[in-house]
Image 1 (cartoon, rainbow, N blue to C red):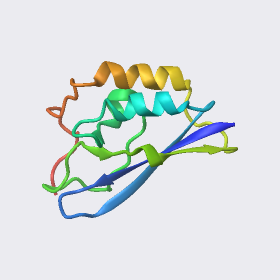
Image 2 (image 1 turned 180 degrees about the vertical axis):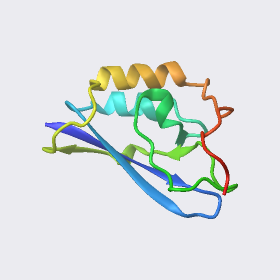
Image 3 (image 1 turned 45 degrees about the vertical axis):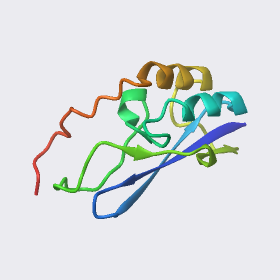
Image 4 (image 1 turned 120 degrees about the vertical axis):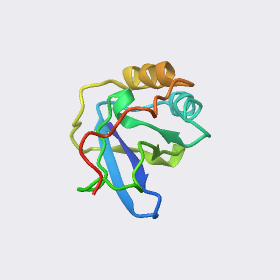
Amino acid sequence: MNTRISYLYRDASNYKQHNEVVVPGTFTPEQIEAIIGCLDAGEYFIPVQVGLPEERFEKITEDDHCWFELSRYGFEETDAEANIDMTPDEVVARFLEAKGNWDDSKEFGGELV
């Protein structure tokens, strides 16, 4: 059994891009709460800073930013094959490392359109 983590990118115009990743193994309720406790304002994080993939939109505009949304309801056990090579313990450790240190100063790469 693996865990699907679903998270959302929402730009300033409220256009949404759903993201998900499948982690090998399952998370305990305590691990999920630990991750939620690391989020900025209780719901925002920067996936690339914890080793998770990010999908926004094809073109970067002035409406784009680096924050994604995650909630405790974004964790779901699944039989789907894992598509990242991090255990639940490693994912939690990366979130704990980023807690209070989210760096939103990095550029996206690419030009505004």
